[in-house]
Length: 141
Image (cartoon, rainbow, N blue to C red):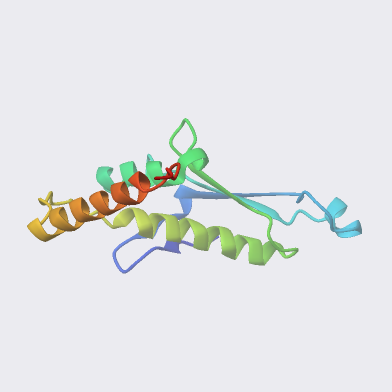
């Protein structure tokens, strides 16, 4: 297994990644019973020296259920019948997950509604109220 390059600055070392292979679930005929094509890629995220604490925190939120109690990310891929292709997919998904966590979210700047937007809102409310007021029984005169 070789190192995994995330971007120009970050490359994950061999010891951080472990792969295990199991038999895939689902249909597949004779092949499914004898060939271990499903890949389980495990990345030791908490212990990784390449990621900053803020990135690790964002990664933990993004990983969700894939984050284990001992701080590793487990990605399981059994999409194709080829073990090599499943390995590629697992590594690519991990890289995408880390790339997404590298981007810090922008701080939201609170703004007040404009005078025009307030007026439009009130006009829409009164128009809607009028529509509702016109509903109901029609009285004979």
